Amino acid sequence: MFTKIERNYTLNFTAQVRYFGYIMFFISLSAKAQYIDSLHSILNRGKGMDYRMESRVSFINNSLINVNGVRIGAIFGRKFKAGGGISWLNSKVSSAFETTGADGTLEVQAKYLKFIYFCYYTDFVFYKTKHWMLSVPLQLGAGPAWFQNREEYRWGVRDRKYFLLLYEPGVTVQYKVFRWVGFGADIAYRFTAYNNRKIAEKLNSPTYSFKFLLWPEQLWFELFPKSKLTELFGPAEW
Image 1 (spheres, helix red, strand yellow):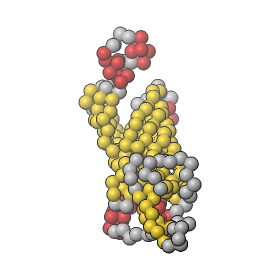
Image 2 (cartoon, rainbow, N blue to C red):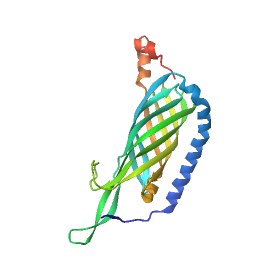
Image 3 (cartoon, rainbow, N blue to C red):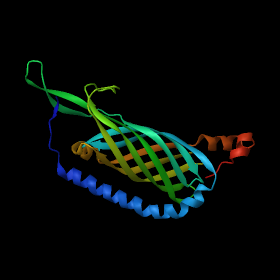
Image 4 (cartoon, rainbow, N blue to C red):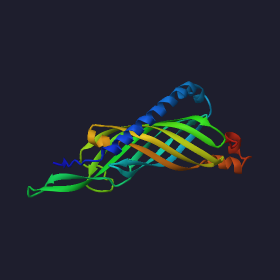
């Protein structure tokens, strides 16, 4: 039987990230009004594919961690994206637990936090020029979290699993250098609901990522303007 050893962390940092989360929530909420007005007309336009791998930086126990993910979805009229994916913790996060040894004495053992969740995402563009784009992504996720003895992911462990719910509003900035390449940045806040309150509070955190963007289909349209694919799906556009 394991008993978690609780630790005290500085409250100033926790308060700051909570206020940051509220700001991100209201920014996202205000942009949703324009999103609702425009959604119907956008869904009737042409579609494309959205596919990417991502790595988001956030905090647990005041330490930087990485959450990796894979996303695939559809793009409607270059204004709205929707799809799904999977994300997982990709950093070493350990906590100390007390356990009773074979001789009846108390021992302290390090166990590693793991979580993985499936998510649904949307992303609505509310400002766009030839080079710049601003959008408001929203992500909802659910999946298990648990502690285990090994640092690597080990499936089928018997350790108790907790159900994890996530809500992550944010803002994305993107700059296109050419039609087929650009750079971007995401700033968001991860709100977590958990059936273990203390763990949930540690997972509430700002998240951010910096991206190198490549659109191979746009590069194809520019290099081969007379190809059959370009005639069907092109030409390249900003």
